Length: 247
Image (cartoon, rainbow, N blue to C red; front, side, top):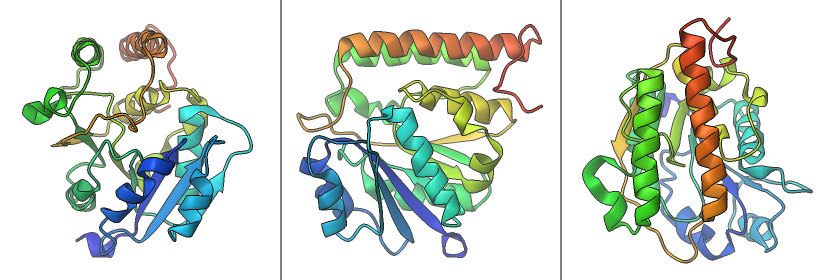
C-alpha cells in the first residue's frame, strides 16, 4: 500500500548537530522517498552536516522564523515535491524514526488522514524521561482540549506526525502562528475540516541533547493552547468566526 504513495519526511531543525546523524540512520529508506531538512538559522553546522550526510533537500533560513515558521517551509517544500504522505520528525532523536512505516501505512490505507505518534499511549512518557511537570501539564491541557474539540486524543503536543498531502493542501497553514502553538492550531484546523486523527504509541527519549523549551516558554505555549481550544469551541458553537473551520 505504501509503495503506491510518495513519502516525504520533513525535519524542522535547530542546533541539531549532535543528534541528526543518529536520527537519520534509523529512517527506513525503503519506505521514505525523500527527506527535507529546514535549518531555522541554527548557531551550529546543522545545515552543513545535513548536506554531508546526503539529505536531498536542505533549506536554511537566513533568520530564525520560529518552530511554526520552520514547519511552514517544511510542508511547502514537501508539497512542491509531490508528496502523498508527509511525516514530520524532529531531528533531535526524541522520537523513534522506526515508527515511520506504521504511521505512513495508516495514512496510505485511508484509515486516518492524520496520525500522531503519542508519547502518552502505553505510558512511556515518564519512563522515557519526560519531566514530571511537563507530563502533568500535557495531561491537563489535553483534557481541556478534548472537552473543547470533542475529540478523544491522548495528546495534542507530540512533534511526531504524519499527514496526508491532501489535508495539508486544503488547510491555510500561513494563517497560523510561527511559534510553538502552530502544532495545536494545525490540529484544530484538521478537526475543524472534519478529518479524523489516529494515534500510535511512540516511545520517547529525553536527554541533554534533545530539544525542549524552558518553563517560561512552556507557560506561554500553554496559554496559547488554551486560546486555540476556546476559539475552536466557540467557533463550533457558532459564537465566533474561526479560521479553524472550512468555509
